[in-house]
Image 1 (cartoon, rainbow, N blue to C red):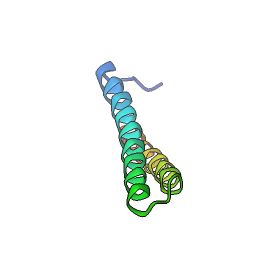
Image 2: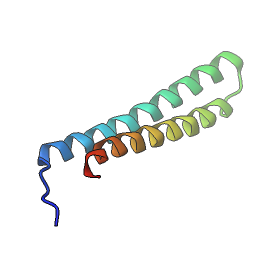
Image 3: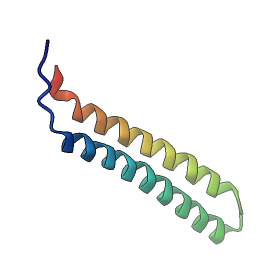
Image 4: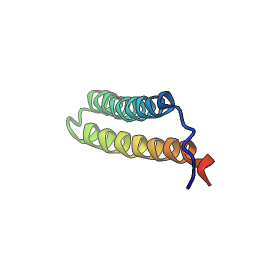
Length: 74
């Protein structure tokens, strides 16, 4: 059986990185979409597209962070 040498602060750092990456990328996507909608007069279209792109980018960043966190367990 493997010994778990991870510090609980490392897990808290991972969780805070995941939350900040998800929230940050979604907010950037929303605000960029709203700005594009305001510039071109296409009210909800780019807001929705920005939301979906931000969600996809946040999910990808989350997966990369988790993969990096658990890369030493091999």
